[in-house]
Every structure is written in C-alpha cells, then in structure tokens.
Image (cartoon, rainbow, N blue to C red; front, side, top):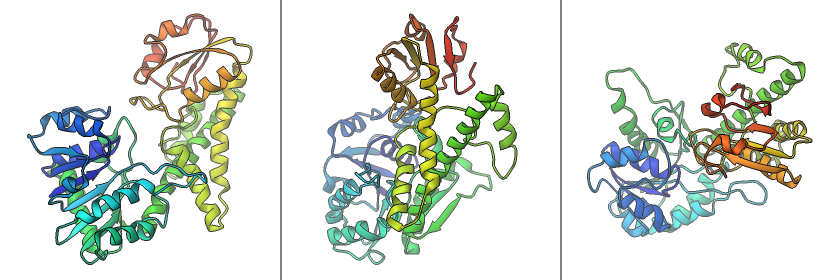
Length: 402
C-alpha cells in the first residue's frame, strides 16, 4: 500500500519505519521541518531502540517525509494520524491537532477509497462526532461510502515502542463499517504476520464501535495506574511494618485473578500518558454524571508516594536524585518522580544534584552526583544504581534494587 503517516514524533516515526520495513511505500507528514529533514536524511527523528537500525535497512525511497499535505497524500491508500492530543483546562484530551490533520489531508484524498485511521488517544465520542464531521466536510465524501474511518490507538511505552508495536496484547479496531476495519487489519497483518511464519499466531483484534474503542483505550491506562497505586499502598504498609514489599506483592500476584504485571513496589507513575489519562477518565465521569472515586484515589496515592519520601528526607540539606526519566530506557522526564522530587526539595531550599543514565541530569557520573549528599533517592530503577557504593548515606530505594 501507499501509506501516509501524519505526525513524526515519538510514536509516528517508529510506526512509519515499521510500515516501510513491511514493504509499504510510506510518506511521513509533519509540520515541523526537523523530523522531516531527519527522515529524508535517513536519521531517526526520535530516540528509540532499534529505530535507526530499521531506517538504515530500508531501500532508498521507501520512507520519505514532507511538510506538505498534498505531497503526503499523493496516491495514498490509507493515512494514519498520530499527533498530540494535549489536555485542556478540564483534563480532557483536546482534538485540536487531530482536526487540523483532518483538514490537511481531507482535500487531497483522491483514491476511489481511502481509509483514515486515528491513532491518537481521544475522548469517547470524538471519532464518531467532531472528527467524522470534519472528515466529511474537508474531503466532501461520506464516511462508509467513499472514505473510511477507524480508531486504533497504540498501547506502547516509550523505550520499547517498536517491540510493543510488534507484540501487542490487543489491537483495537474501532469502526462503523467492515470495509474500513478490514483495510486497517490488512495493514496491521502486513507487519505482524511475516515475523511469525509457521506459527499459529493470531493477531488479537477487537472490533468495536468508535466509542467502545475510545473508552477501552482510556480504561486500560486508568486500570494500570490503579494497580500501580494499589501496589504502592502495599509497599508503604510493608515499609511501616518492616517487611519485604516485594515478597508480599509476589504472593498477591501469584493469584491468577490478579497477576503480577504492574504489581511491583516502586515509585509514583509518570510519563506523558498515565497521569493525564487518569485525570481524563475522571473528567469523563463528571461529563457523564458518573462518579469515579477510584480515579481520584489513584491520583491521590500517586502524590502520597512523593509526600512519604519527602518526610524521610526532613533534616537533609543536600540530596542526590538518581534517575530523572519516568522509566528506564527513555530520555523522557515528563511527570517523573525525579522531576517532582527535584521541585519539592528545591522549594524547601534543599541542595539537590541529579543524574540519569539516559535522560539529561546535572552530572554525567552518579558517584560525582552523590558527593556531599547525606541522602540519595533512586527515582528511576536503572540496574546501574544497584551496583553503586552509597557509603553511610540514607538511601531511599522504592524499587528494592539494593
């Protein structure tokens, strides 16, 4: 197929490279010149494991990029929109950039049939509401007759984007007509099945309506954050009792009704998705007249983890924070525990030094970062931090690395 990918950021660039690797001719579209130049110069526009290797292996011309919508849509069979949906003042996801993308591609849809896939996370009611209306207006076509529309968000984590795309637990296909759904599934099949030749693997598709798929996406992330906060609550209890939280949670997770995923002692959740998804879930409840006390409690526990650490640091005038990224393997620090602690401690006039293995920290060397500090907080669970000599400093290790 000829594929257009709108948005060449942390998810769009890996997806474009993956589709090109599967044999499709892919044209990326981004309003920013920087990622476009990177793609055209065969450079990965974002830091992500294996992405540069995929791009290096592509035949010339298989993956190109442009800032022009008309050029991006020339001969395109299917387009995937994977642009940011920032939170608005109420905590809901804004459709502004998605609608801008629809306005950009709509006038240039020229195939007898073209399918538009929304991969960005949007609020329930968005795809079948304002997005569908804008697509019909911009393209002058009727959805389900000469243009298709699907909602299919990615379930990935930064630092393992390509691996997660290639090994999905579920592929949501939100569609109101079977032709659009099949068109999208053919595309997904093209990069999932070739790697599993000879196996009985079946892609875990779930065909749903637009709104069902939208609700499923936001519900998954909110359930995960609830599980993380529950594990952290047990962790705080275990700490107060002087027992091993890891052993307790391992026993709890052994029950097949619960499972061990995301049931580990640790720190507060962060990153570009989990915190805002929990807030958006609560905002959705307000708009529907449905109470969501679990979402609020989840967020409260997440903040309580920071408060508990701050209490342990009372009296320490210099603190080293090891780990500024929200998780290992990514430079992203958005909503990370390290950043939250840094702000809280400096607000209390504490001298703070920082280090990270991947993300930007003040010190490139962890040992130097700790010099002069009477306390250390391991905010990101890098294995490297388990091997350090901490001397007689207070070490706060929510992950149980040591």
